[in-house]
Length: 181
Image 1 (tube, helix red, strand yellow):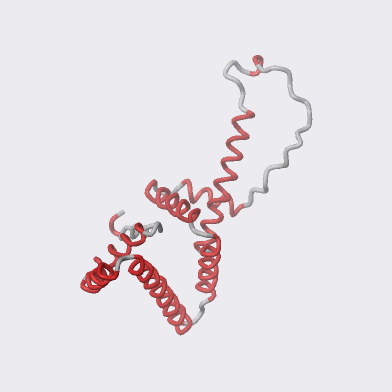
Image 2 (cartoon, one colour):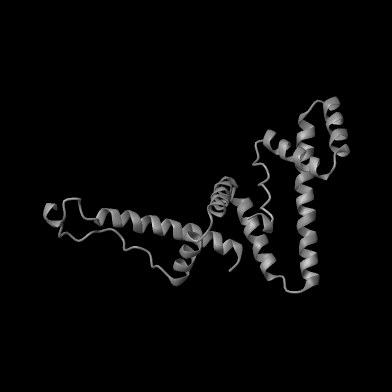
């Protein structure tokens, strides 16, 4: 199962489990026991039946229940960031995932990765160009020189700062290395 399907299934499963747990609370017995309940409600409800619960949904819920708190926290952050992304950008990202899943040969993989790197560089340069264009000419020149003098790590921090200034989400923190868990 690819990452996109994993996230979509997780979101749908969480929504379904919230529905099930909320429905279970309504059906729970009062503290005094069955004798304290009022007359039974014999009317047929017009509410739609709950959605079908598939084996895949059960596997997804099990996977979520077994996740570490840090992983759940990262997933929650990812979903919150995802909600802020414009629909056309999300559609583009879904298409990118679909293209990545369809890559079969190493040559296709290299071509796909090259295309993605070039697109990200264009987006980054467009971001910096917009930022520099918003500054007075002397300050823009100074900022350009400052950016070009930075090393790779410092450039990433600089771009993250520019993203914050322009109202974009900062870069997500890198995932922990395999030995750190």
